[in-house]
Amino acid sequence: MTAAADLAPSGDSLAAECGACRRCGLAETRQQVVVGRGNPNARLLLVGEAPGAEEEACGQPFVGRSGRLLEAMLAAAGLSSEQDLYIANVIKCRPPGNRKPSRAEIAACRPWLERQIALVRPQLVLLVGATALEALLGIRGGITRLRGQWLQLETSQGPDQLAPSQASQRQPTPSPRSPLRWPDQGEGGIALMPLLHPSYLLRNPSEAEGSPRWLTRADLVAVRDRLGRDPCLG
Ligand code: URA
Figure 1 (cartoon, rainbow, N blue to C red):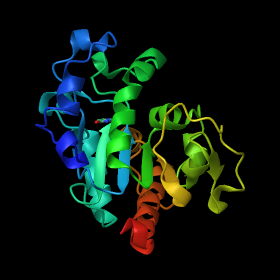
Figure 2: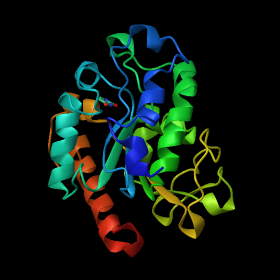
Figure 3: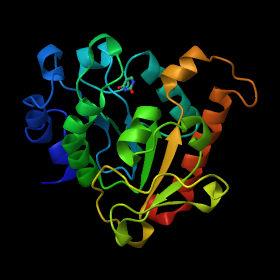
Figure 4: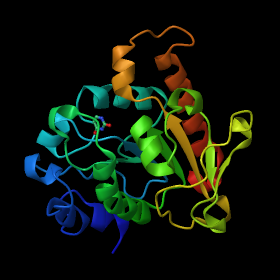
């Protein structure tokens, strides 16, 4: 089955299987699962934390206040969420009260994220917020230090090899063990960039030089430039 067919919002495969999931207690309180949106054939995958109330009501990730800010920032950087990206979350069900998902919930939901990653086969991945950074790479804390840096996952050498790119060599090496199974993307591997979460940016509205929003805008321009520069990512 193609990525487009299996990830189609109304498709009867991943979305339906996910909708029947009872792997954790979130199944008791959810109204519906929120699987993903965007272009399932995109080379850029964006992973956030978990759906909020508006996402749960619509069945689509990042459509509430955080999503609207994210959308505006992507557009300002020249990135279309419908064409250039596929958007998903670590957790497919809304945690009650929008609390942070627990480690057990993240582990229970991991197979769905792995299925999505295997279908999309992204070459660039944006890890939006600390939960995505921890869930996908096993790195706890450090989102402010690591945001904007390209981290290279050398999938051709095995799924657990994570090497900081040249841009991040000044930083301490992140944990090399990713909790996820990644598809082998050959010599190019997969490049990942942590980004500040838009809910944090909503609480920090300054646009001044050096502010979190200013930094995130610069990070997204770097993403757009890498997509444009690399013919394999075009
Ligand atoms: N925050 C997230 O991390 N994901 C969403 O889908 C909405 C808000």
